[in-house]
Image (tube, rainbow, N blue to C red; front, side, top):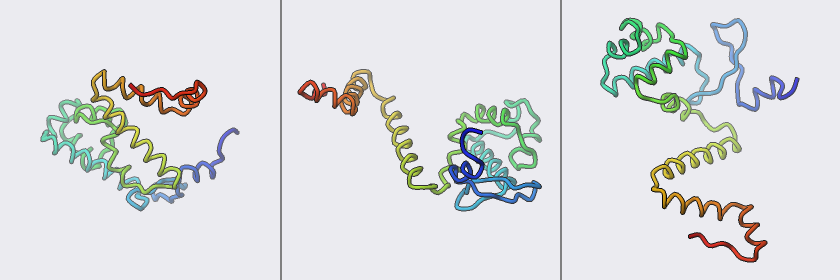
Length: 172
């Protein structure tokens, strides 16, 4: 079998073995807010997040239920975690509440402590890249072209190529 073995994969991802009371075999989870929470509690957190987002948008449960094509009682059960929804239904809720999956789950993920120095640096780099792209999307065409040319001039292979020509190319 190619790739990591189970224990290597568990270590690579920073997973921990958990004996879930609802399962007859162990499962592997990551810490959330410094602890490993059971899946029922995670369901509660998702339900609370749904309720919080709906209330923030000042939308009645009845309206969300209608937009989803379910009864109000069914949607109410989603918000109190007495009924679980499918992934497809959850994505539909995101559409109705005008939120992306990333925005929905962001508070859960931000609570996780960094797993290792390497992952922390990678996460910081990814965050910086996302923020930079956000800023770039706001630029007009002229400014974007200037930034593009500057980035090209800063790339290691471009710098080496310019050194070979005897002079560094100035940014416009």
